[in-house]
Image 1 (cartoon, rainbow, N blue to C red):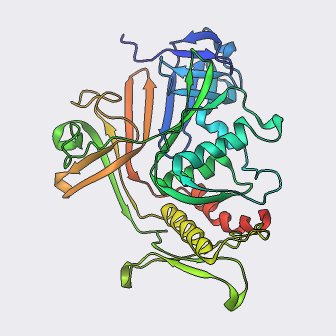
Image 2 (cartoon, one colour):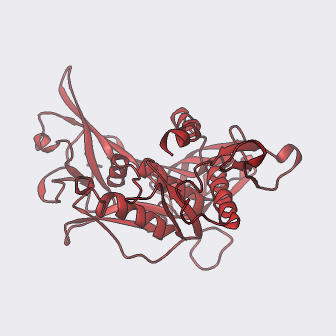
Length: 380
């Protein structure tokens, strides 16, 4: 019988190797371009090294330093056999454990810079060099800042750090991750940009996913305007007619979907050196663009990728790349970023699924978005 499982290395948070397992019931990992992913490992409790699967230990799939996960949940079940289910998230999920605390004496952590600088600044302020040493992740460092991504103003206060990084990522198109360096024995935060592999460009070998090309086992296509907005009325400080409101977006008629954004926090805490009206307007516009990036129309292909197709995962294409997806029978062709990849290892084989484009938000994501404006008043 062919063993489809990749070995899983178990390490301490300090990246000291404890053991390795390659005989388990199943392993499923979801990797995302804009946000942390998660994993689930199911294993018979009587198999070797299960005692090493402890909370906060780190597991690496194969020898890939980018596919590293941290254990946060264990569940034991006794039925016919004793089974252990281990869950957690990709290492970038540690950012869910931190809030964005403003620098001492400041109401907000504000800066205007490129996306990479903003992300790495918030990582530094909240994980590497915070004013409270209890907040430090001693294993974490920032990779070199190459100043990638568009420039924009950003401010944060008491937000979940992972959510804030996701918002910056969705607004600017820059992905992010935490990998490991075994030589340095460090966790490495960095951003990245996928390659353009679409059929219309001539720089890179194009990658086209299509049932007609026999590199896709199944496809699902969603095209939805439910929950979509493309016009934002962004309201700053003040009351009634004194409140500054800017309009972001330019659609009209039936194609126009309006949203209100409460941004009364902008300009708060800067009474000693108040920003100019032009600076306030720029920040309000940026806040509106941020909100509209969260409410973009959902258009996505979800595909199961053929293991025998001509394009090899992590060789010809990877998470974050922009590729072409087609279904000629449906009359569809779309260039889209690969925003999610799911790897499934089971006894009957390896399955690979990918999401191209923007999925409909889950109920949890909708509720989180609705709570954001409500939280502005309680945290300002």
